[in-house]
Image (tube, rainbow, N blue to C red; front, top):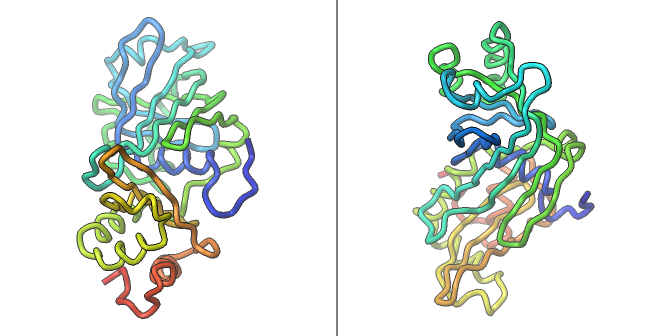
Length: 250
């Protein structure tokens, strides 16, 4: 479903972003053992993954037609919450081999926009496979939604995907004052618990409220999307009602 609101990323954008910062992933192929995945690069509606060269995944792929497969990606919060899972994503499609003579060139291209030390393992015990995604499902505290391959292809990751973890860790550890000011913006019934920063993107900030009866997630949107770290810092301070507070980058 295509969203027209501007107070949060689309589901497709959230999937693209989560796949850039994979906490853990599992590749499942019928008739083969599941394979833990450490590197996932989602380009449009194709997911490139690294697997052990001598593992079940490589052996199970049909070189001509490809093999039906499912990739499960778990998006973990970067701070130590009571429940760290932010969302779970399932990418369903057909798994194909990547020609061995193209693996290194493709790894270099991927590293240009999605650096990961795991790419260095290609040819040294790791091989690359390509999942042509037919459909995707995003499950979070707000429910589960289906995303088409076309929506994935049109979406891009959030511009702050690389720095989000550092900002959330900094907020949680060093800016209790700012978190407290932001918490005052939450609905009254959601202030009866420990408020922790959960997510940050160009549209706003999300919090996890750890209460006695369970956890709740809530988003505080910015008045308008931001495009760089200076606008992000200013938007957070303005949202908290503290426009002259020291920069979050300190």
